[in-house]
Length: 122
Image 1 (cartoon, rainbow, N blue to C red):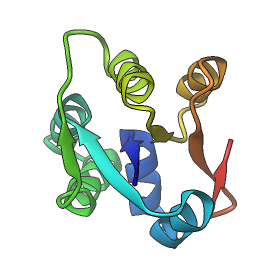
Image 2: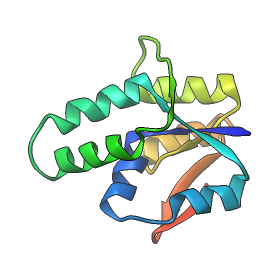
Image 3: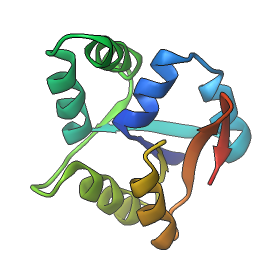
């Protein structure tokens, strides 16, 4: 079963505009294990403690990811940790962050994204 590491941008996007993301990933990759790195969780927690739309979406994203497998982080930035974990574990990454997508594609990591509310490989 392939691991898929979820970035905060993807989780917040599907919290804002619900999609059939799980079915879409199953269709693209087959069985998968959703992973939430500790640093991504911490990023969402920090955002959820604020006010406004982003805080609400971050809180919803945390609820959505409650059953995901945890993953450790080192001391690098969140995007670097996501990329490192993906390379080290042969995982795909679910993100809608353009800069992170470009980095991951350059590293030949499969990227799960969204286009018009549909899950797709980038």
